[in-house]
Length: 311
Length: 276
Image 1 (cartoon, rainbow over the protein chains, first blue to last red):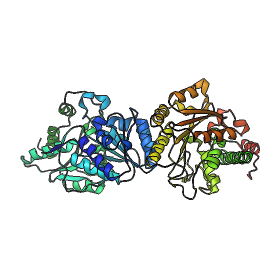
Image 2: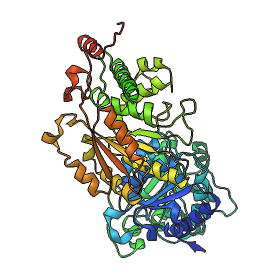
Image 3: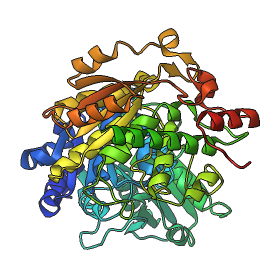
Image 4: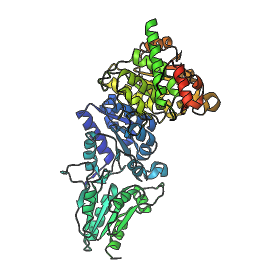
């Protein structure tokens, strides 16, 4: 399966957008070689703003740029983009619906070595709680590119969370991307897995293995956490024996919260896979860390087997 | 020039009258930090800035942001005098659904440039505006008023570094140094001095004036236009509550209500008769 790095794709897409639209500006807090905004800096130095290691000022400054008609992309690690700049995002940007795109890079546990300070387990919860904010989690490079292009024409603040690592291409190349839509990646009839980010590929792996056991698994990529077309989620969950949610985020405030809320009153049993109200930690590899926090294909398989009464 | 000054003095008095009317009787309002800015805001709107109230989003306008957003009343007072909106709005300030919110809201109020009020953020927003205007080769200037209590916010100094680094000479900040934070004198509670040396060290061109002396204010604003290659800071020494006798130098009226007697006294101080 083809693999792409979402950060690289994002950086290249910004350059494309910069060529097409003079109003695109990019702001950075001294992580450009990691977030890959260095590509934009190289091509458009006048529209690139190095703001130093100051996320709060960067975010408000981006608001100011947007007030002169610019479409501003702010960049940092997700934990800082959403955490350090929370109040700036809330007060100066989200209340007046400014056209600022906040990109949280190296999100979730994907910055495995740096430990709890650099791993974002609650960024999506924080951003979802802010009125007027759009919250997105692309599944792969293909969706990262489509999403990055689309949000330029989508007015208002957007938070987009990017993984640090290469991810397998899963998003249908020909499919048009739209804010709020959930994407069927694999159809099935017994159990539905609602996932986003890296957990979609884990769900696909689980579905392939369970197909051999005669269990049919539907996988839905919920890349728009907010807004979200509730009717689509209800439709995908309407004809199955069980529902699983899988996310690289705290179980508080992320995908599990979104899905269980939408399906409130629904009698179909739901199991949730995510980070159980705890911080991350350092590890020698991303895979090791995902396993330690239960964000695995095996865990999805076991959840599905329980839901269909096989264990 | 004397005529210009005396007209601006009258404008400043009218701004204070509007502020007192907006605070009204029995409702809390940020009287002190609004009144300290009356001359400065009068000079900006009625002497210095280019704008068009019929076209609030005119791209070549100059912008004024109150980083100390709690002083919104003084800006509302000016915008109402100019005709950005009906003066009737003054009587509805902070009512449910009102155009004039407790802190500046660009969505509801014509002439308001940004949402400020969470202190420390407005100067960063002003920097971003100045940078955006420069990208488009516009001549517009961005004026940003910060409070001395607000200087405790670290983000102010992040913005100060940014403005100097990017040589934002279309940015003019005005520091309302009224010496009082909400709970008392700054020098006793959380001293943000020395200010001239700090702003100079951060790379700004610094001027120091009496913020109630219109001659000094317009001279500084004009002089600011002649300085290129760096952002400009006008440190304005002011009196919190200026013009309302019992509120001057009095932190109690940072955000407080007026009794009927106090309201009448304030109107008398400002030589204004209000039919109650």
